[in-house]
Image (cartoon, rainbow, N blue to C red; front, side, top):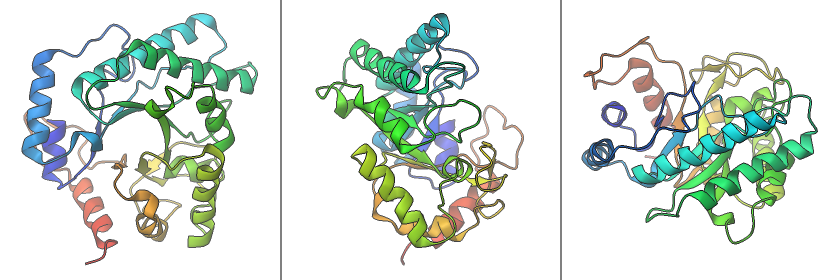
Length: 284
């Protein structure tokens, strides 16, 4: 149904959960019949599996200094990669979590270790599903708010495994964490240049979200594009940047319907409006 709803909005990429996001999901497996239906739906919708993201559970805290929480999160991330690989999607992304009262550098290393564990636990698979770090808005002691932190997490991964991981950027999180992507095209380009230079590669996906809260607020509250503090033009600049070509660009913006019926494959009006706006940025 997620695929069919995305197709109804004429989307070419999508993101979904493979298990309830408020639980660790460390014991949930991908059932063969669900996998088959999902792959059939993608083929019918014309959405390429490599343009599909799975979002990891929100409760995973791979940065935690508490051994039990860190171990549970490490197992949950590995299981998420296992399910994502079974579904044959391009990647799963996750929030690194919070360092709590622990050392930030050591927290970054724990995130890297969790990625290594997941990659070593799950065979690569025919579609080479990757596990990707998502930048954060920076509230409290959450990790991944800067290029330097993400670079340290990824530097932990051995070179032989490095192709199976990477990172992506959320526009709301960038803005909220104090990265100037909205004042000018040049400022936005400088931010993306910084991430590419420090981490050593381009982002593997973007989440296209406006922000309910002002610049540098560290608050992760998404808004529809044009309804928040970022505004419309920065998204036009972003879609004109070559770094957005050929990778998933995912909307995590509010929808008009609070809930959809299980058998309702129609598009949400807010999604249709966002897609119309984004398409207006493209040439021709």
